[in-house]
Amino acid sequence: MSESAGFVSSVDGPVIGVAEVRGLAMADMVEVGEERLLGEVVRLRGSLATVQVYEDTGGIRPGEPVYGSGGPISAALGPGIIGTIFDGLQRPLDVIEAATGPFIARGAHVAALDPERRWELRPTARPGERLAEGGTWGTVQESPLVEQRLPAPAGRVLAIEAGTHTIGDVVARLETPAGERALTMAQRWPVRRPRPYQRRLPPSVPLITGQRVIDTFFPIAKGGTAAIPGGFGTGKTITQHQLASWSDADVVVYIGCGERGNELTEVLIDFPRLTDPRSGRPLMERTVLVANTSNMPVAAREISIYTGITLAEYYRDMGYQVAVMADSTSRWAEALREVAGRLEELPAEEGFPAYLPSRLAEFYERAGRVTTLGGMEGSVTVIGAVSPPGGDFSEPVTQNTLRFVRCFWALDASLAAARHFPAINWMQSYSQYLDSVGDWWHQHVAPDWRRLRDRAMDLLQQEDRLLQIARLVGASALPDPQRLVLEMGRILREGFLQQNALHPVDTYSTPHKQVAMLRAMLAFYERAQAIVERGAPIATLHQLPALGELVRLKSDVPNENLGKIDEVAHELAQQMDELESEYV
Ligand SMILES: Nc1ncnc2c1ncn2[C@@H]1O[C@H](COP(=O)(O)OP(=O)(O)OP(=O)(O)O)[C@@H](O)[C@H]1O
Ligand SMILES: [Mg+2]
Image (cartoon, rainbow, N blue to C red; front, side, top):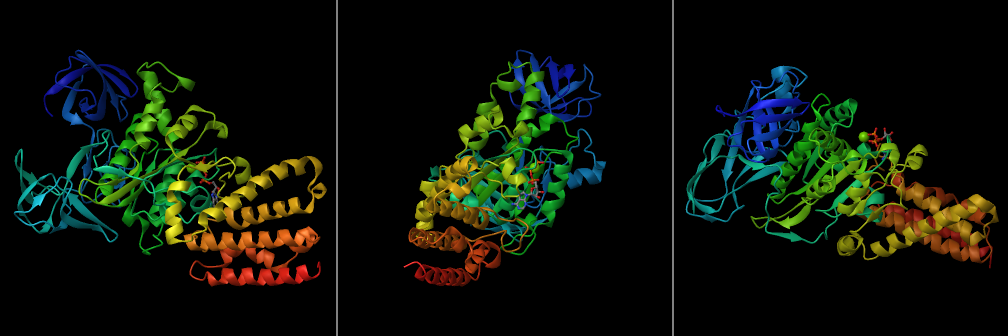
């Protein structure tokens, strides 16, 4: 990268014009000026190019050289990713900070993966063996929780060297159709291009999150997509953190799109403190953070989601279940809008470029459960937070996101204000995976999961309608069977839908606990209906001592002691027997 590929002709914030272009292609990565700021060719017309620069361009002057890199922006894939906090350009934040102080220096060229660290390579293929593309040729224990399975190009193994090596060392040689190839433990992949796989698999396995309103009411499948839209302070970040901590993913990639300065700090401080509940080890041992600091220019946010999803696909290709969280895609879309404005692209809705929908689609389409090239099963699940201004879901980012995701967890400001958390509005939310994950629940948890879920949902819908009437005429004017529905709605809302992320027991419910809770609640309702029909006033049911316990199952009964739920149900049934005997 020494000979210049052109000269700066204009500077407009993150967008610079390049004249006298030689040997640059669309989407090529370039380095701009003497400081060698990182950028990407976004437009090419004859000998003129437009470059989007991912760093502060203050100080760049017309006439400075622009250098080509010979290829598109790519991510480094190899040992050393897990546990690292990267910026949008995959520069490790701690390394940059050590080198240049807390504010990222411009043109900071640091390696994505530590070039000096030594890793123990365990070969899994022998000399003479033929490997299919994507087959594993060696493994490296990257963290106590994640083992990297290094993907090979197609070819015949000539040699592999076990032992400890750096990622730059040549550790294997392969005979390929294109000639002999030397392999290191690392490789590069262009971030805007999806990594290939053999075939897509149906989204039939749920991602179990332990969050009841999600798993039971609006489930997401492994390899699925979901959006969490919500106004200011409605719980987007907490929900994402809960999913990162509790979901049964092997690897979590968390992309912080620079919501606000302090939000990023939240991520940087919170995540390293979280514990992986399954192993008791630090969550960072199976997590990668991609974080845009607020002092980085907007354009860097735009690339960060591609960097993040490329890292996710890399682990998918090793046969892992990967969950990607992006918080918030609205900030990413705003970056897109700002850059598009500078490029003088024709704006569409609310100033967003007309290609907003296709960019969103490209991101969410990289989710999926697949058979990898190497013949393993892996998945990338994508969960994006959206922050619509004023919490108004009719704005373009929310609306366009809805077109490409199959789960919609709508956060509601009035629920949040009433401290109903997670503030996922059960009347507005939906999941298109209900049918596809039903078999899994049937086989692994309970044959009646779907029936219980639909029954509970039906009662919540009835409650919603009755509440509207009650608002006009007063609840006491409603006949008792309808007041019982209101009572049942309260039990489901307070006892099932509400879940306190900060309570040690309530924070996570196993699938079995979710079903047991719902079964106990619905059993109460069926009995109560009969009793009310016989003339027992609602108030007598409301006063049953065990009813309070039914609503507290979520925090009183640990996941390991589900027998306690049956005890409560039994006690409640006895109390109802007594009540019923008074109305024969
Ligand atoms: N599941 C939950 N359990 C308990 N409290 C919660 C839960 N979800 C949200 N909260 C409460 O709501 C507050 C705001 O949540 P959070 O920061 O996640 O909102 P946000 O939508 O990300 O906000 P912003 O728009 O500022 O990014 C939290 O500090 C917490 O008090
Ligand atoms: Mg937030």
